[in-house]
Image 1 (cartoon, rainbow, N blue to C red):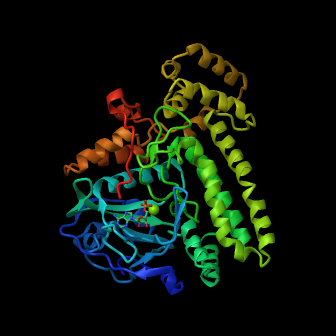
Image 2: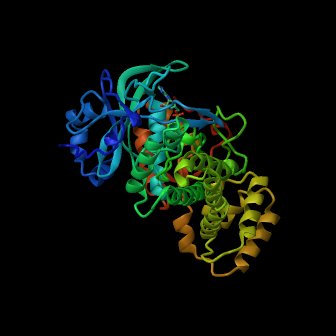
Image 3: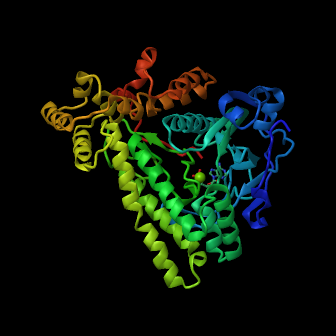
Length: 465
Ligand code: AMP
Ligand code: MG
């Protein structure tokens, strides 16, 4: 087998999926293959780049060992429950080295509803860049194995070139997967899901409550990392939150330039439900939906089950806050700091003065003029700097390891997409290369450190479904 599949999900009971083969496309064109990731999976990158590999990644051929399917799930979308979602534009080919290999945009499935099962090229490029940037930053995330053009057009507001994204994930199990069975009162399948999730992701967990506890812990740490990079997911629906604790589904996501706690980008999120500062409470809200789904497995006595689940959910804020304190303290070079106020005061100064989130932390341990240039009121930041320096023991090496120089800034991602739809992928490859080593100086690419000029600012992002 050129791709060494060893599939497990397909052996779960029939209600977990529907069989769905990819639908061929006109003329697959290779944009990128992630050679390092391919090797990690035991796949020869040269094979993926070959004619045969391209046929597989485009869905034009089903490789030996693949057992293509669409996963079933439900989800709370913007607070409202949709009992029937499922993979409408993604097909799981199978598992390689314990990881899911999925083609996103490979055609209609039994879960497509009114959608076309396809992806436009723009969202493919965005997901590739941003998920790989997250991985390089050290954030748990699904990964990008390949990106292709299809030679076909997809109809959105206007016709757009189509693309296919090959996604690698520890799994595609979501909070919405548990909700799917809970909503149907299907305890047998719920139990099968819990057992499977424990075996695949949390082998030391002993029961459903233990699993819930482990997922709460994972998600609290994940969200704290997002916050530490100024990352806004944009669509934190329960179907977009994994049980593994990896970031998934990079739709209208964005890294903030100018810091403001209420910042949001997603065009469809008019209320700002998924704004930056709402991410921790929304994660807790989503985890509460997971807990509800698991109740029948937590205890036969439902009142007792609620109590036990609540006990775990109550711990989320403290776990999150401890993780956040650690992350932001490291960003300030303070390895053993227990004072959140010093962090909060800096953030307050930044938000009041629209300072750039990434540049402030980057220059804190370095260029004072650059740092001061981020603030209109120099006196206030100078006063804060004195307080910070008085703490002593500032670890500059720690700051360099925790404060990236390069993030996928919206205006750069936008440039990549604009060029990509015209068939020019040079900007994609350039940005991708820069983002591979986000903590390292790259003097020849210094422009990419900068925040957007007023005419480059991206105010809204789109799901691109
Ligand atoms: P998302 O907003 O990408 O998380 O998707 C939410 C739901 O809509 C999932 O069930 C997707 O599979 C489905 N969906 C999104 N876009 C499409 C599409 N173009 N065709 C079919 N289903 C889609
Ligand atoms: Mg989704």
